[in-house]
Amino acid sequence: MNDVCIVENLSFSYSPSKRIIDRLSFKISNGEIVGILGKNGSGKTTLINLMTGFLKNYSGSITIKGKDIEDYSLKERARVVSYIQQSRLSIPDYYSVEDFVLEGRRPFRKFGFYTEKDYELLEKVLEQCSLGSYKTQHINEISGGELQRCVFAKALMKQCDLFIFDEPTSAMDIKYQKEFFELLSIAKQELNAAIVLSIHDINLSIKYCDRLIVLNSGKILYDGKSKFVTKEILSAAFDTLVSEECTAPLHFYY
Image 1 (tube, rainbow, N blue to C red):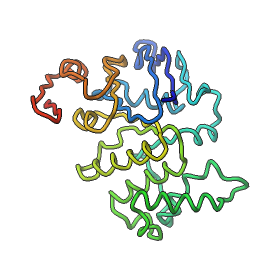
Image 2 (cartoon, rainbow, N blue to C red):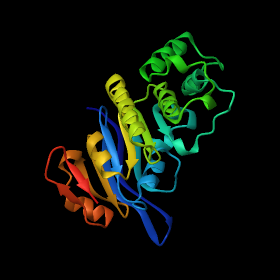
Image 3 (tube, one colour):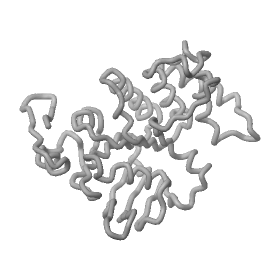
Image 4 (cartoon, rainbow, N blue to C red):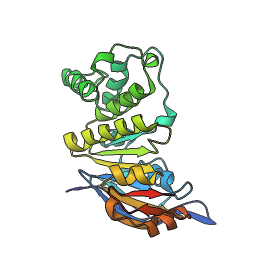
């Protein structure tokens, strides 16, 4: 596997009195789904915002595809990283599903026009995300689950090596959570992409993520295969007793 993102000795503070991110080092490789797991305030979202270039004035380094993140222009960064913040969507009412999904190719447009290959990719991605029959519908006429698929389809249009999500499942019911992780498997299998998501649900992260980076107070408590994380580590991360049912599949109660 190739390292898509390398974080080395990363620290960040909003004020001099408290470090939010404290000397983190890790690598993210192609073909893995990595969950950034921790309670609220553990540093998950701050780490995501650092990895996507939205926060500056940190110490250490963040490298994406062999290039320091600070050396990317906004347009260049949009071509190599698909960053999805679903709670902050702003979509014009007049957009159709295919209009919205096609926007994923905007950073790659030449002279302001989409190419024939862009439209061929659009048809493929709409089918992959089960949106082919919705493509002419207005975006405000579809259900929450269909909108979820549209958001992911737009990200998939970039054909990136790195997808980053901030708490993507926090407002989803069980059905949509399952659909979301099924879509993640498309990016992993079709593109051999590296996928990073912040998450606070222990059982979802263990079930669907290949690897976990567990944070507490901005420090890494655990970095390894999700199936090997222990109840002791999770109890320390969430500052509460986490118990394990001794049956397969692995399931924790807290």
